[in-house]
Amino acid sequence: MFGVMSGAAIAISVFGLLSAYLLGSIPTGFLLAKALKGIDIREHGSGNTGATNVFRVIGKGAGVSALVTDLLKGLLAVWLMVWLVSSPLTGHAAELEMAAAWLYMGAGLLVVIGHSKSVWLGFSGGKSAATGLGVLLALAWPVGLGVAAVFGLVLAISRTVSVGSMAAAVAAIALMTFTHQPLAYIVLTLIGGLYVIFRHRSNISRLLAGTEPKTFGSQRP
Image (cartoon, rainbow, N blue to C red):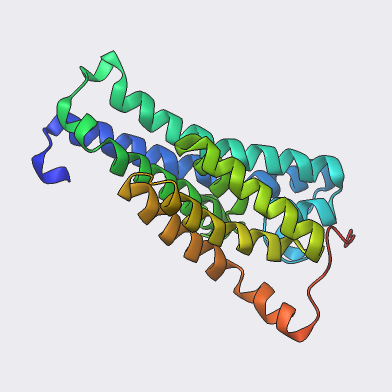
């Protein structure tokens, strides 16, 4: 993709992609736990910085705040790339517009990776489900809403957040494919969905052992 771009277009693309990773790297749950309880959230509960662990360890308000902020990170990363591609400041570069879907895909993937591998936390973080949903809403909002509905339904039935998150990851791949979205978006959901499931491998082990906690069970310090 970069081989056919001008130097300015490459610089704009790299800026957007790097910004997506750094936006994803903002450690929302870690910062909330430090501010509200003075603790390192990684030393409590499941040990990750995602909204579910914040909910369990810190409380409902902090958990909802982490969830919304993490979702917004996914939205903003893609929207920034959309703006860079189409902004008059870039001169509506034809090569950027031709590669637009792949650039949006790259921004979406990097914000998800940034959330789970934050440069500020020694490349640790959350499991990227909420941030991934934000990406889906920015790319194809009907798909995002469908994925959110699947998550809510499976969560209501299983009473287990991890099961809902993994079901949502699979649903994202299916819905992107069946609604005939651009190939770049389908590739993103395939890679991102498998990545989210991989990030839940410890949850899978607990599910098989029957020790996975149910929805938002308290583990406050």
